[in-house]
Length: 104
Image: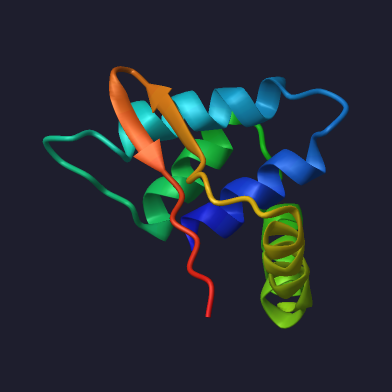
């Protein structure tokens, strides 16, 4: 669910990505501590409050994305058509994060 939440936070603030990056950094420091990971909704809500992100807008966005899973199917179709096989990854604070995409 956190990946959907982060996607919504990004999409709600495309004109000014500062709130998104503040959330990502604070989430990483607070909720994704390698020694004590807290990938839960409560931690995320605390981070949204601390970074000034409207939790209700994020929740609405998440509900829409979950109801409309066609977007995910559309993305998968584009990946297949464009022959995208590389797994996207990001290096954050020395830790490599990968997004794994499965094609059925």
